[in-house]
Length: 352
Ligand code: ATP
Ligand code: MG
Image (cartoon, rainbow, N blue to C red):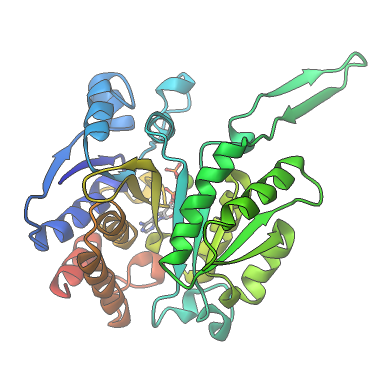
């Protein structure tokens, strides 16, 4: 079992180190970790944010543990040399089209949610966001019309096969949970959404055990704060998923707690090949000061064990240790506490 460890920039370095210490503390037989530069760190060392050697290492591993990329003073660089291109490049080169973002409220963190505590306590959902299509990758332009007025436009498109493959990921995720799937679209207005809905209904025939609902995205945004307990797995497109998952993050507390997995179709010997990262960025403002909360990255490592290496018990063990540390009041600065990066890592390790 090989994990490519790509810490990247800023707090990515520190939080990844703690996640690696947690993995090492589990003493998993046959596990090897191989490190490579990515982002601004790679640009400085090798002249490119995603050097060929890093991409090759990632391709050859069973899973990737990714920290964060981005740094001050990169805006002057040509677009293809900017740190963010590294993560976009990995997602597209490795066809990682399904972004799984679980949102669960940890015990004791009711006060950190943007919702009322009794509502926040109901949240236990996974957003499955499509990552390789939608307006993000369609043709787009700002053009000047004959009368001199400017017009901007973005092409939103999905093919049947793009929808089908993300739908399968979502139905399988629902099977592993409460067997409920809510597909979010805007089918009353958008043709892409009409196709999305048609394909999801077709795929549903293969999963008769899963209850499928459809919801318009505007209603979904409202329901997410009104009655989040109704959701189990939510599947949606790239743009709607981007917005809804940020909304979900504020329902459960801090950006320093949320993990994610980017998965494709490729199977390894042990599970599904994937890239795992915290949803936060490189936070250069607090980098190198032992201030970053590593829990999101530690929880990403747990997702890695669960989905890519088939080590479900060990993943549960990490999640229970994080939950235990939070319940005991080990809170990072992002949660109004005083625990440093290393201290939080130690607290999780001691509870494994
Ligand atoms: P990027 O361009 O790198 O994605 P961003 O502008 O999206 O950056 P983040 O890097 O996610 O922003 O950070 C936003 C703020 O949240 C940071 O300035 C930092 O104070 C805080 N923050 C982010 N991650 C953490 C963390 N793990 N622990 C504590 N604070 C954090
Ligand atoms: Mg960011």
